[in-house]
Image (cartoon, rainbow, N blue to C red; front, side, top):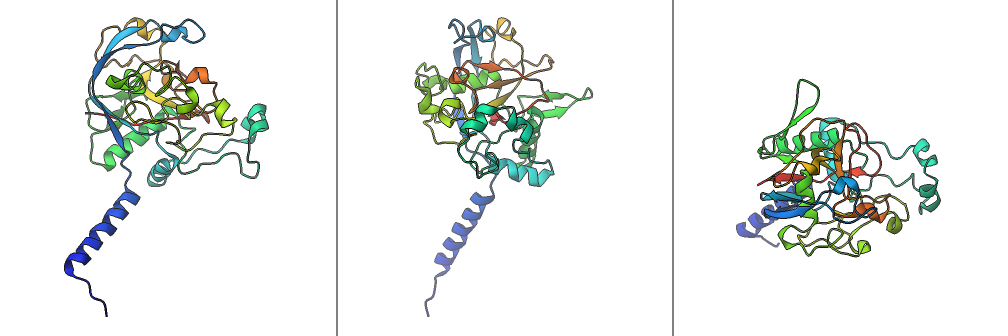
Length: 298
């Protein structure tokens, strides 16, 4: 009969424990972005550089962490189960019928639309549900929550807290540019969009794609161009760049009906996937292009 030493058994227990820890861990892989000063915004003429991307202005960013990938469906499903917050519904018939191009090019009619596949970026998430996810994960890991509901029904944001949060718009752009390692690309990681992004021409309008299947940018961050639009902490204002020149860690906290989205998506043309592209839908609005990426203050 084969026997095992105490050392071998102990090693086996450690390996098994580590495997289970990895399976059930919710902690995302975070990339350290060393702080620096950069030129934010676009000096390109329309249509490549839209009005809300101007003027180009100098911004300084402190060290922070950002998610290697967008939050995945499998991550959000754990959150949904733990909190009772329902998963969004896959595209409904009304949406499907109102997007004939998507219907025409959808390449797997046997499947009910594209569904929620584990390694897809989570999509159809509102800004508020993204914030609830951040607070839940912070609490789960014993960190201070960055968002607090206020008396007016809105959310107060504290960037000094230790927990998970959405990146500020300036942090997002600095990371998308490759931080201090930036090579000055138009998109996040390349001047060739197809190398780094899923957008409507590469997805054939068939839905989001698995994360980390395209080339990362200079910091090893994936999908900052394309796949899903990513929520930021800031309120959106088309004129915010006119007042943020020279600021350190700027974040627009002036209450507006809108929040910032960055990066483009699988259902948008490539022109929306530049590192300077901005959008600002109403806070309560979401659709099948909207997801998010985590950040933390160092």
